[in-house]
Structure formats: C-alpha cells, structure tokens
Length: 128
Image (cartoon, rainbow, N blue to C red; front, side):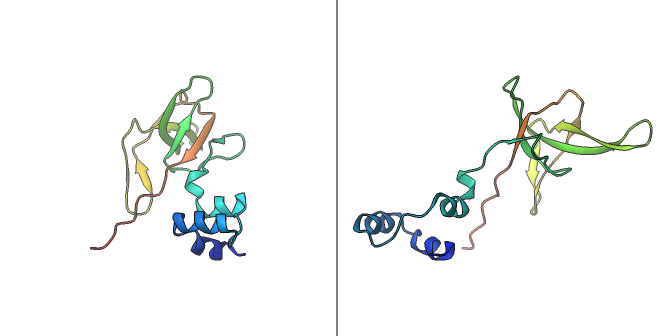
C-alpha cells in the first residue's frame, strides 16, 4: 500500500480505529507514519552530525547547561577579512517573513549549542 493510499485512509481517526479493529486495513509501518506526520517525530540534531543553514533560525540546545534558545548561524567578516560563521541568539526576537523564519541574530563565540532542531512550519491561512 502506498503512502498516498494510507494517507487517504488515515484522514478520519475514528474510521481508522474501527477499520483496524475489523481488520479491513493494515496497521501502517513506523516509516509510513513518520512520513505522514513528520512534525510529531522531529528530533534534536547533534551539531556534529548536521548543521543548520546559514541564517536559518532554529531552536538551539546546549546539553551541558540545559539552555534552549532561538538562534542560528550567521556569517561575518573577521579582522583578517575572511568570511567565517558564529552561533548567535535572537533573544526571542524572530518572525516569519512569509517564506521562512527570520530574526536579528546577536553573534558571539559564547553561544555553543550541542543540538538544534528546525522551527515548525507556520499554519496555513484558511480562506473564508
């Protein structure tokens, strides 16, 4: 059964439950469920494994201090005129600009996250 077929069947949770009890539909695999509901399975990503894009506003976490903050990575030109990047903090000042999350990032070597995760997508406006 394809993911699209399962997605169609999973639209009504009560019908899914009843049909699973009747045995008329098979239980979806974990991978199918994760592909249908990715927001329920977002995990913290270790920075050694993967880095967020430059200027991507994300949740950051430091495993040593337990601190969580919004921030990201940003480029700047150092004294040697080399372009480098640092971690930064938005201090809670971020917004969605219609395409992606944005914010004013304060850069400092002090910010040393161990993990990150993307912000969720904004809700889609329903037309009246």
